[in-house]
Image (cartoon, rainbow, N blue to C red):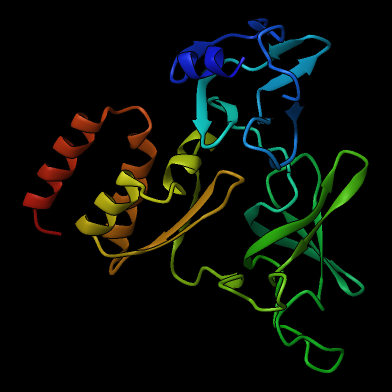
Length: 247
């Protein structure tokens, strides 16, 4: 099984494609959690085990991460909330001690005023309707309302909270988001080299940018939206021409 999948990494797989489990050696399993043994395989988004078969239920490129994690990288615009992901939300209302936040999913998420670093009943955070929030999903499943926090496991903000003064918020596909959040993202590095800027990327497909002027901010936003449909050579050619101009 592992050799079959590794041989297909980078290939386009379609819904309905399947792999037989017969080639798995004794002790190998398909898991939805992190592997505890080197020979255990982790199924990510787009792959599902069905009896003695491994099924593909989302079309896209097969990706692999060492040691044995596989998933389907697909073009997707609709966001489905997932626990642990960091997202950009918009505060829509306040109900009692809870804020309602739009994260781009099918339903609003809730955020307690105590879910901020240093927040207490007397020291409440200054959050207004319409503010942008960079937050993490603490609870996210189909049977419960999504819940956000603006602190990490140690109770620190770690970059989360209210932000967005003077910048521009726009939407991109989830595939482009994953490319921007990669540890060594060529797209992000090349854009920041062209125009020094602040950039916040949410796993829900929202991106916020701010540069030294409104014109540069708009140019960066347009370039980001165009990058997904360009090859690496085309992108570098466009950025090279932009670098020769004066803005």
